[in-house]
Image (cartoon, rainbow, N blue to C red; front, top):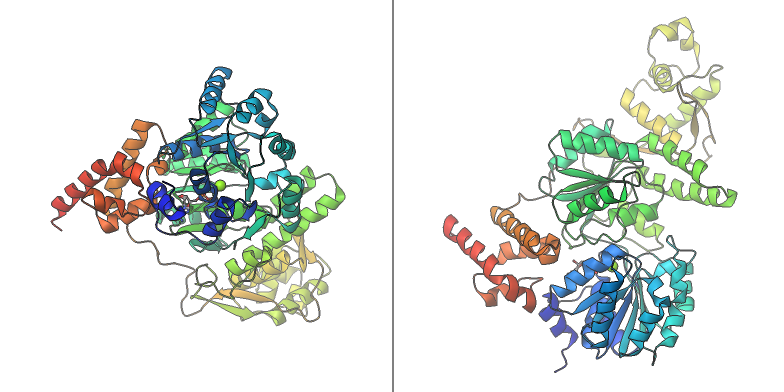
Length: 597
Ligand code: ADP
Ligand code: MG
């Protein structure tokens, strides 16, 4: 009997409905049409090709650049009762031989391969013996030099496809594709009149937050108080910062590990696995961490530093909340991040044109950190997507104890003041002058004679500082020197330029004490999480491959006590129900008895 896509969705994956775009992609593949599918991280691309793979009569080959991800996907498929295998350089020749034999015996429905394997005669000969219905190219942007992760081996995929006995359906998936990259994918993969699905980059479950803390460590510890017992990633810009932040967290009793290119392979792999298998809750990492991380229960991604561009930011932040649960993406911005990024551009990019591009991208990133408007709209607009003016789910939209003030006039005074000074001073002195302070140096150097002395006395020091910061970020004034930096005029104010800053409402006083939006984790949820962890240790697979947090939460809501009821939980399919229902039901019953519900 042939199952419909809805039946497959329920039976294997345990879900009741498709997400936006999924069913059209599935329909097209099943009907025999090539597909190009661009969906953001966590949108559910895997399901878009795994369901057709289950429905089609032959075998599906998935080309993927990420070795760690292949293992994860194969474990995940095996755990819902789909026969899958992978072939890549992590396996010994001996094991590969055995896998080939099983492929020939038609024992697998889905086979994951690394692109270099497509050259291997042994592989091609094996594959030519079986019936291939579908070739999937995951992370398809790797085929383009315009993508951020070009893999030359991807260029051979079309040739590989042409060597097969009959041409299968070819479908390409990626999370990041500009127009240029999309064009490359279609041409270089020789897609045949493909159905193109480009879905919104909006990830509604992600709460976006930018903070400008005076002390990042204090702010970080404050943020983490809202995330006890949750898994999260903290990105830092340098290895050294990773080391310090990780030490700090461990000293404060957090379960944290770290990842960066300075660690040897063995330690890196171990730390990564500790995180994936929930042995450590937090990983502190440079941007080297994350490609191929499929962990679905990441509840927060904190950027301790501002990254170099919006693409990187959204990709990294997007590793939160893949299970669809509410997750937080918090960026701790500091002015020094601008200098670190500029330093990196100066020292890593040779070509002058490329440098200019990098500076442009950095500027957009800074724009995200200092915008007073909706953060989600900013990102979506960046990716050429229209957005509502306010999303209601970012720190700017939810800002109630701040108000936006037009400071154009005051900005003009600051610029004027700098112009009028023959000697250059640092920020503190400039604030003193504008505030009209009677500081010793002001008196001894006769600075009270300046035309703009005391002109901003009605603002408090903090507000003047914020305004100066903003002018620096906008390049209107510039900081010069490293040890004792002084302020000088930069590009100056444009004629009709408006300067706005966000200041705390005076009546409200102290800066952000945001209500925790997260309900307290229920007792039953902890019990089920513990059981899930035990099972994951027993089976040697990551906990999230047993059930996602979203599934456990639905279980807490529905509290099933029979197998029929268990099947109704979101994310429980037939295979997992047969495998796990008894253990989970028994814990739920114990909980119900114990709490006299
Ligand atoms: P992507 O490859 O697009 O980054 P994944 O395929 O890894 O995303 O899917 C992310 C998560 O979303 C997975 O945990 C998956 O089980 C879940 N998911 C996908 N489709 C659905 C759906 N229709 N209903 C509920 N959860 C889904
Ligand atoms: Mg994916």
